[in-house]
Image (cartoon, rainbow, N blue to C red; front, side, top):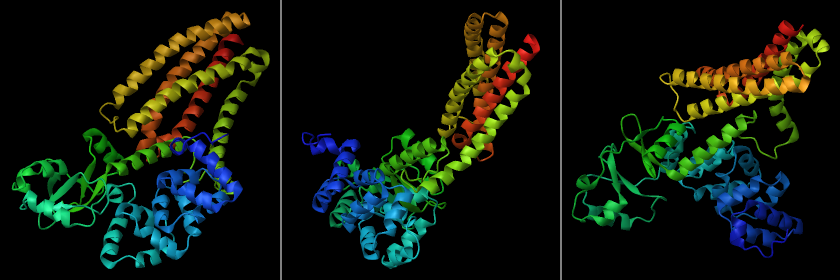
Length: 457
């Protein structure tokens, strides 16, 4: 591909062009050009590019990245990729890398750094900041406490807006994406927010107590990341305070943290459907990838043998009516597609917290009704085609009967399997597809071959 006519702006927003260009530079061996190319990218773009390269090329790229930028890149990488780069990073460079990070990103990175580097990095941080970080590290990654940044601007209700403005002007650091100041009392108990728009437009002599919004509630530090993301979506928030059980302000969550949560959720769901680890590196070693995937291949093999066993029960029928073997995939395929549609809908509803004990029964009835309607419609279609194809009304009727049975069972399984798995604390996205395939294959073959044995033999 000729990249000479492509502007750098176009390259930055097209990862395929970036990948083509950096591959060409790596082959040329020009470290100066590679360094200049990487320097023009944002950290997130560099991270995305690194994940697209093989391990050997990642090391070459990493060698030209300045230490003060490394931290911003590491927090954007998948865990396995980040760990691999940390292993080849010198202690001094790693310490310098964490110096430029804000508290929430620093906490995320500390979770990835192994011993003994972890202890050395922690020791390089000031005592006061270290105690704050260790408190933040005590929260799980997938909770509000694990998402929050410790960098917050607080004011008290007894201050005037003019005093707040003067205090802000004296500061040397303002946290990124600051849209609100948090109002606390002398014990750091959260009381409300003071929007910057209000601070800048109201009379400076007005008190904070008269200008703040006390209707905003703090997010409990133990709330799950998924629930926090839903709150941000439903309330159109840009930032939100995180509070302890006693109401004390701990930190804040910003919308960029929520974007990461949503991206991770989508990535996790996509990988779960194929039985892949959410931290799995695209270019991880062959044996590691093979070992991880072998488990699900084994599970799939068991389910395949179950379907084969059902077919084996009707060996005599198949020997006498060969047409049945030709039509079997139709029954299984129709059930599989119908079940997958219902399964996807229910898993989505569970993920969005739209399904509970109150409406689960109504949803179940609705999906079962859809299965019956589609079953009747498509059983007529396949019965007609099957009868004409093999010049046999009997085969057509049996094919249609098997399809309607399988579509109804597929709707039943697609709606019930995710609910059952969730009650068992098993991710429906991870195991639902395998179980559904087993049900539709076994029921489909049993119905088709069983009806054929009863009425054609």
